[in-house]
Amino acid sequence: FPVTISWTVQLPTNNCTVGAYGDGNRPLIVYSGVSDKVFDFGSLTNTTIQDLEVYATNPDNNTCIHFFNSVGGSVINCKLHGGSWVLRNVGSTGRFYYINCEL
Image 1 (tube, helix red, strand yellow):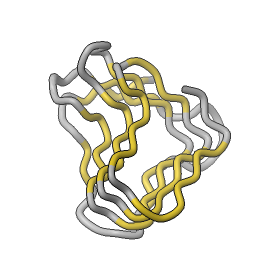
Image 2: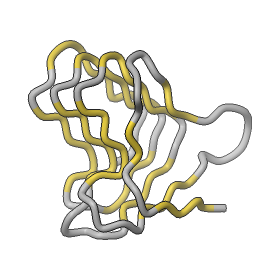
Image 3: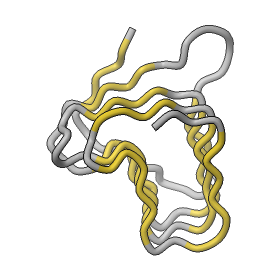
């Protein structure tokens, strides 16, 4: 079943992983907010998001995953839908990995 949120998810620390584990389908996160980002990983180091499905409902003004001035990160085994920017990386440094994803 989908989880609907209306706020931007921001992490408070570096070296974090947001994801699911176990068997079955990926958890579906549906974003119904009016902000421009579902997951905002600005200025963080080594952030990973994995095994999730993210759907942004506003095609004109949403980004599913946003790295901004970040240092390294990974998006692994995710499905990202909707939004004008599905995955965005601006002003970041280091290595970023996008593995086995559907955009």
